Image (cartoon, rainbow, N blue to C red; front, side, top):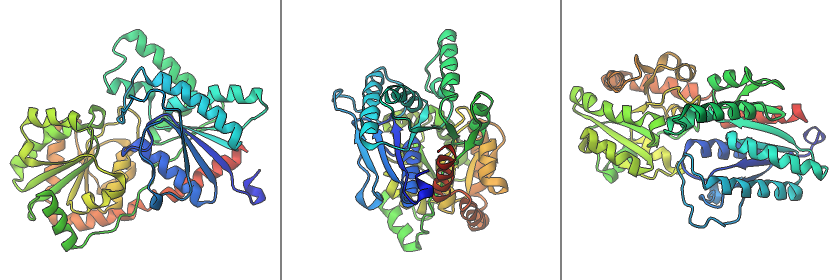
Length: 402
């Protein structure tokens, strides 16, 4: 085994996505790669032709290799299905094969169901050439439920077909990891080869801002200094619970007039119709896009945070860990994943409705004297979920299958 002989492992990550974009899937891919690189392993990422480069100051030596820019007009950064991705995935199969021939990885680490299927095909070709790298499947949630949450698979036969495809992909890989406890349990019941390891996202311990820094940031964004700022960071998509969040703003602000919401993320064109629909433009500051590496400023000027995601897709919540790492109290829905993160320090909505979420937000907003205590508990709790721990868990799995 290369690592036990004192050599670093060669890890090729397959990322069928426009890496890097400022959203959860990409953050998991990046931070896993960075954690492995800090442990001394050599990491390359095969991905689409579009996406931002990793800033040099944030890159410990990861090499990103992109497919050919044949679909030069394709610019979609947000999540969701697109028939053109079939062409991109075929190109990514080719890139995975050629890069594997050149790099000779010990491990191919495939992200999301698409990446797992791409790697499976690539391995068929590689084995014809005598290469047999080990294969780790990294599931970020349920493929079928996520597509349903994006309003796809409306016909029964198509839903059934994709559910069968998902179950087939769930059984791939010499080892498998999942980003949430719920998803790991579900996939473990399907897999015949081995169980699934739960590998939770990590939290970045963000520096606490001084009162002067908070004041300057609020001035920059035109937010009153005496406002109670409730922040949401993430995608403005239906499966993230954004409509419930926007629907909660009017009742919440009616109860606490000093409440002001900061919604930071993208795509903005998905959010604007909701703000108009609920008539909450004056109660909201939109920051779009939100660069991942500057998220500390937005969280640092906020008082409380909101995570409106349901458990529908089996995904974990990276934003929850960001809130915890920033020392913020959190209002959210009462789900097993959220309970595992927050324990008794969370303020939970009783039902999965905008009205119930508003009650939780108001309850938290009125606990001003408890914010520091709750935030401190969350910050301490975030130390149980670090990217370095994630990296060491992955390293252990790699060595076991080697």
